[in-house]
Image (cartoon, rainbow, N blue to C red; front, side, top):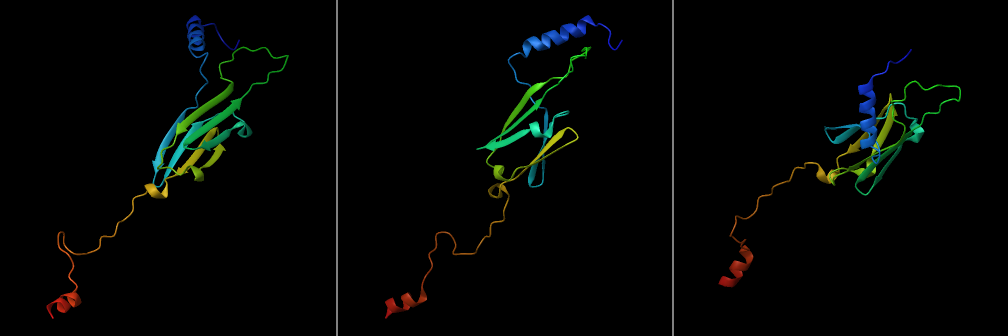
Length: 149
């Protein structure tokens, strides 16, 4: 036999199901900043890449993916612990990120999203020019001579 009965495991599973009835399963994620980009990695094992929907609207990045299990009539389910259905995750992007240049790829069960830092948020050098000291006004030599004559 594949499994043995564990009453505590069944109690844990039942408790988890009861507390998460109204919640849509979230997608686990890591976020890292590397130089001028933010890299997001979402865990989506076993998903068909065509079922993954990635959108940016205003400053909200939305990830939606679906995983379904089609079982044959002649199959007897011994264990069904993996979650199925629609999974979603939303992230609010700051104004420092350029949501118009998001790139994404899916491989080995990972959705990798790259968001560049906006040009306006990057540090930039400000040129300092020399000018008259504070509180002093510039004197035009030609106008001074004209007023003395």
